[in-house]
Amino acid sequence: MENLLDRITLNPAICHGKPTIRNKRYPVDLILDLLSAGMTEEEILEDYPALEKEDILACLAYATRLTKTKTYIKTA
Image 1 (cartoon, rainbow, N blue to C red):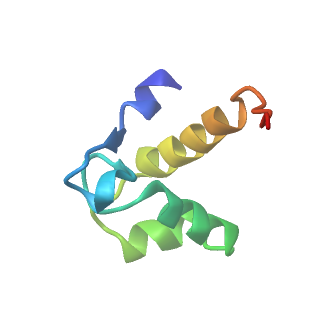
Image 2 (tube, rainbow, N blue to C red):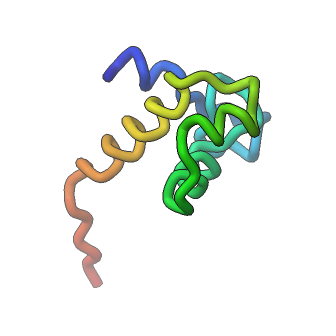
Protein backbone atom coordinates (compact mmCIF):
# COMPACT_ATOMS: atom_id res chain seq x y z
CA MET A 1 0.00 0.00 0.00
CA GLU A 2 2.90 2.38 0.71
CA ASN A 3 4.06 2.19 -2.90
CA LEU A 4 0.59 3.18 -4.04
CA LEU A 5 0.54 6.12 -1.66
CA ASP A 6 3.76 7.41 -3.25
CA ARG A 7 1.59 8.25 -6.27
CA ILE A 8 -0.39 10.77 -4.24
CA THR A 9 1.30 14.16 -4.13
CA LEU A 10 0.70 17.40 -2.27
CA ASN A 11 2.06 20.39 -4.14
CA PRO A 12 0.93 23.94 -3.33
CA ALA A 13 1.49 24.91 -6.98
CA ILE A 14 -0.93 22.27 -8.29
CA CYS A 15 -4.67 22.37 -7.59
CA HIS A 16 -4.12 24.69 -4.60
CA GLY A 17 -2.28 21.97 -2.70
CA LYS A 18 -5.07 19.39 -2.85
CA PRO A 19 -3.93 15.76 -3.02
CA THR A 20 -3.35 14.89 -6.67
CA ILE A 21 -2.11 11.94 -8.66
CA ARG A 22 1.59 12.09 -9.53
CA ASN A 23 1.71 15.90 -9.55
CA LYS A 24 -0.81 15.97 -12.37
CA ARG A 25 -3.97 18.05 -12.28
CA TYR A 26 -6.11 15.07 -11.29
CA PRO A 27 -7.27 15.57 -7.70
CA VAL A 28 -7.85 12.45 -5.63
CA ASP A 29 -11.38 13.63 -4.85
CA LEU A 30 -12.21 13.71 -8.58
CA ILE A 31 -11.38 10.02 -8.96
CA LEU A 32 -13.27 9.13 -5.77
CA ASP A 33 -16.29 11.12 -6.99
CA LEU A 34 -16.23 9.29 -10.33
CA LEU A 35 -16.04 5.91 -8.61
CA SER A 36 -18.84 6.76 -6.19
CA ALA A 37 -20.98 7.92 -9.12
CA GLY A 38 -20.68 4.43 -10.58
CA MET A 39 -17.95 4.81 -13.18
CA THR A 40 -15.84 1.74 -13.64
CA GLU A 41 -12.07 1.72 -13.56
CA GLU A 42 -12.07 1.06 -17.30
CA GLU A 43 -14.34 4.05 -17.99
CA ILE A 44 -12.14 6.36 -15.94
CA LEU A 45 -9.00 5.18 -17.71
CA GLU A 46 -10.70 5.66 -21.06
CA ASP A 47 -11.78 9.21 -20.18
CA TYR A 48 -8.41 10.08 -18.61
CA PRO A 49 -5.72 8.30 -20.66
CA ALA A 50 -2.85 9.88 -18.68
CA LEU A 51 -3.93 7.85 -15.65
CA GLU A 52 -2.98 4.27 -14.84
CA LYS A 53 -4.81 1.56 -12.94
CA GLU A 54 -2.41 2.02 -10.03
CA ASP A 55 -3.44 5.68 -9.80
CA ILE A 56 -7.04 4.67 -9.11
CA LEU A 57 -5.88 2.14 -6.53
CA ALA A 58 -3.72 4.85 -4.96
CA CYS A 59 -6.77 7.09 -4.56
CA LEU A 60 -8.62 4.30 -2.80
CA ALA A 61 -5.62 3.59 -0.59
CA TYR A 62 -5.37 7.28 0.28
CA ALA A 63 -9.07 7.43 1.20
CA THR A 64 -8.66 4.31 3.32
CA ARG A 65 -5.72 5.87 5.14
CA LEU A 66 -7.78 9.00 5.88
CA THR A 67 -10.59 6.99 7.43
CA LYS A 68 -8.10 5.41 9.84
CA THR A 69 -7.21 8.68 11.51
CA LYS A 70 -7.96 9.00 15.16
CA THR A 71 -11.17 10.59 16.27
CA TYR A 72 -11.05 14.31 16.72
CA ILE A 73 -12.99 15.62 19.68
CA LYS A 74 -13.69 19.32 19.65
CA THR A 75 -13.29 21.00 22.98
CA ALA A 76 -14.96 24.27 23.92
